[in-house]
Length: 179
Image (cartoon, rainbow, N blue to C red; front, top):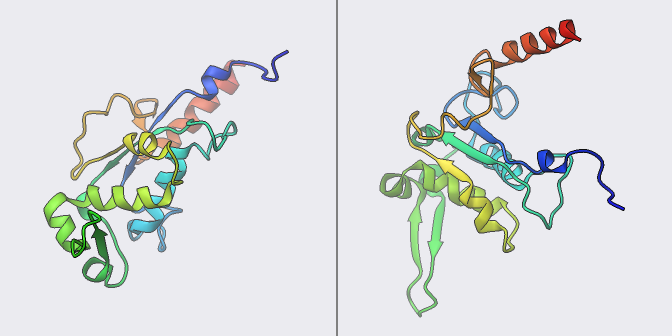
């Protein structure tokens, strides 16, 4: 007999989340509603969404995470002097081939989305699901992206945009009245 009760396909369905790298966030920012979230806090939240740890059906061996669309990666917020002192290394296993690039050079060359992708990649588990999870991260330098129709909406307002909580409350109140 099956141990599951109800519709399990709905629990494993993937949802699209939108996150802005430049907008202040009430819980991820060190100064709520003043500064945007720092690179590490933003990357850890994205890693949780990609792994599916926010869902009650989380299992480390299954890939039950969601899609994440990150906008405004050109305006990533870092604290201290990380932008000039943080180094990224790569090596092709040949002697003397160690290459070093600082964060500001990497942002000029590939954009802030590559810096964010490297930060999220470091926070994901190092297993065979890592590449599949990282492929669900869609990062863009500006506000425009082709996934606007996929993002979760309540009453026409995208989750994460200004005023979406009020739309959720309005929908809940109408549901209470209907029942």
